[in-house]
Length: 145
Image (tube, rainbow, N blue to C red; front, side):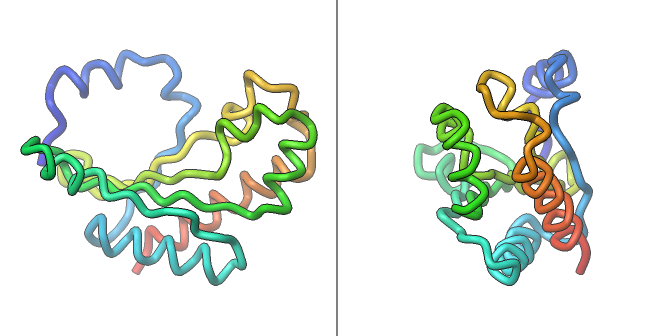
């Protein structure tokens, strides 16, 4: 299913897109989200929620390409960020969107340093690097069968 033309143009024109990572994946949105969830649990992190945006759209008689959001984190890392600046709790836990974008399943997430831009969280903190590494590793693992 294609994104509406207006949304595609808006996304293409948004300068903040440079702050987002996109990983192409093999399999359906549901399969990739299943793999991501399994990788998160295997890594010892906590899955807080799995949101099926496409089902939400159907529930209000609207159309949306397959899209699921996995919300997860490691409380030790997240707490460290919030100890530096409680506002980090607005952007935590971590989130990865798995979506069908013009027939290609992709995993999309915001770069951790960018998430904390409007906070006093130190970009060089060890937990920031650990979060970045986790997102990269987990999404790459989920992207492949």
